[in-house]
Length: 244
Image (cartoon, rainbow, N blue to C red; front, side):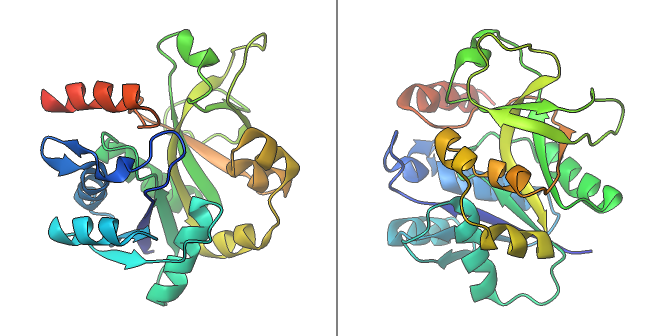
């Protein structure tokens, strides 16, 4: 079974415009993500973007990139257009790695791919233990509640995704990591659905799957990488990666 990794990326992020090309150790964030995905060695890696600057940067760093429409409302729509433009006939799974997680763990990428193939899942993602209580209230950090606790090699089903869980029970709630793997036909089905009310209100596109009865399995990641949503995130991740 074959997996294709597509990394959606754009310059016009609302909270930190231009973040894909911010430099860490002399290399852009998007190229760090590309190199991590490539190092996992689970399949071909393509960056999908609407911006020529990102195209140029990825190519200059030895990566594969495809130019897509600027009309997409979500990263999943962008990866689906890229998939169609690439016209790949032999792909079973499409993995969407967020372009703002330059410190994502290579072994965690491998884990998600292996679990998808082993369990024959429709959609899979990752989550990590929450190490700091402040993470529960941080709306930039997405949380996932799973239906049963993690056990060795388990791939439990997500019950819900949320940004803020103040006042809610914290049992079986983990930090959601921005990576998804779709079985090909499920990806086609997912992008055909209208954006749900739940998705729009929470700004979480994975809720569209749950609202349409598609189960999402969750693998346990080794740790929480820092996603770059704000300038504070960027400075924090820059400091961490400088000493790695």
